[in-house]
Length: 81
Length: 407
Image (cartoon, rainbow over all chains, first blue to last red; front, side):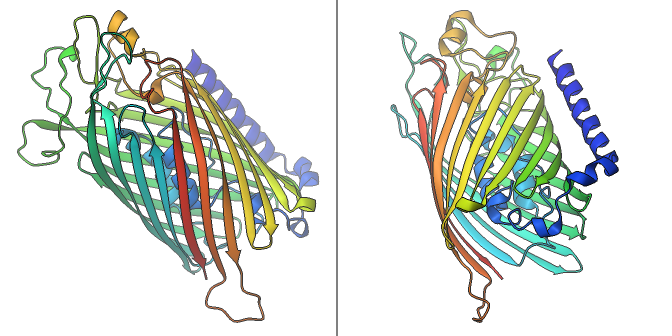
């Protein structure tokens, strides 16, 4: 039952993402222009830590906790460059 | 312990083996050493030295390469048998051990202005465990780089050494592995090799909401199929003092959803990052994790980071504490002495100082940026009872230093 509810949640998230990706016209008013990205380009705004530090951190925590995930997908980011 | 180091390797490989987005980053060489110490009130506890070396470089045309090496030098003591810490059955004997694990990884990436793909491979080896891991990651920027859709997939082909229990009639008679001396040796009859296949998928969607705010949501699905017990660990089960090898299910599905955000405070030259995660798996474990990090430039060349981390989890369906296994026996056909499968919570607090040197443009220099970091974190475990696994090791120190050059 629990696995089914998780699967349903993931499906809803996927549909929400697809709807967002397909709604280009409505999204445009939310876009941040390139000249507005100065703050976002700073290293302190990166959701992912530097890869080597992130690997070390996950190496420790994933071996001390029973859960995994949540650190994002490598290559994801704010697209601010 | 040794198996624990491997269980989540796919995600680690994904992180360590994937080069930074080549189109965005310069050539980089970095080295890092982490010292992990988990003191014990009963024995030597655990000490791990974890060195890492990585290089990455763009080679033109949007192609980037990366390579790296890391190791775990582990020394310490681990209980011979998972048993109650109190009462007449208390067993405090511990086995001293040393272990050395290495991993080499390499990656190739191709980036365009608004998308990219990377593939990485890693090979990890130690006396009793071998691992091949292949990972592919893609990302695609949408709507003027305001959204980034990313997807990664990793597969692991792992081999685990175990005692040969072919002649064992019952799982309650399983013998634990006592030495890795004959592991992966042709013709050895006292040990066998088990397979463990791990698949992991991680989609994520990032959104640059405002000039100050970035948010990200995503998930992780991981499926483990194969031997997942610690082959060295024994568990005191039932009133007849049987001490069989730890026996965990061979199949596990794990799911996590997460959300993250970063917000800038330009007036303070600072930012705040937050993360929340919900986790559930087919062993009936549920967990909630929260993370908060604050970054602030104390000077243009000094960056201070302060971080807090909270993790709360339930136990696996077949988990009981040492007294529970002793008095009531196992839950179904499985038993474990793994702390990470017990009901527990972790709190971590710490800070990092990063020293940056960026030569002024008017001065010629052989590097673009030099960085030296030092970090300390304290990790505390709150276990449910005195008879929980590793009750004698309530906290850990994490000390880390790193040096990086970017050209």
